[in-house]
Length: 263
Image 1 (cartoon, rainbow, N blue to C red):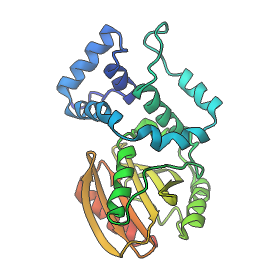
Image 2: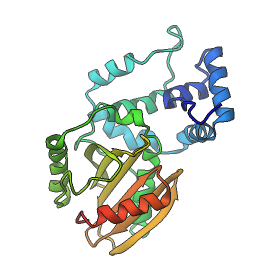
Image 3: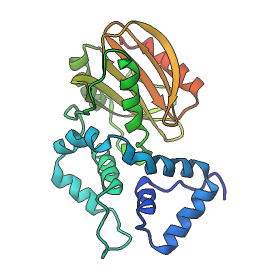
């Protein structure tokens, strides 16, 4: 098997976990898992997903979704066995998350709720919360939309109003990456901006800015949930760049964009 063999989608992997694939598809996915370490790593993450506070974290997002449109999208997904009830566990919930983001329904109305962090270690906790749900994102999650400059500026205007920033499509541009969407989430009842891209290899990449009264800090690096992160802060905001790129590339992009945004 070559490295070009596609990794099964999250929908297919969760169906594999839940025993919902027919024998032929089950054998095909099993073979891919044996020969493709990235696919095996993704499966391991999804198997652990029930240990994360996913349902609580995404509950408000799903409540805000236009349920009719979302149900239409989910109905369009092919089923392996039309006579077999679909899973109400990880498969349905992960699919709903992906469909919600792909449909663009989380713009400035999405509110991510997590357990209230303590004052000590808040910086690490918000980054961990972001990394948990970013690990669920795939290229399919972000969809095929290519917003023009006017649409991007309108999305950034919402972020600017909520966070007191002056972002433009030019200031948030990342070399080699394609802007996909910008939206407002929340952590601990404070606004959290998420600016989403696809990197040069078509993988999700995000610049996140959080309204946080932390001490000013230079760029540092870490790794969470198989994602590399560069993070820094001012006296009003904390920021992070997170994605699948090598740590050195993430840091270089962070150094570049941090000079162009007031965070």
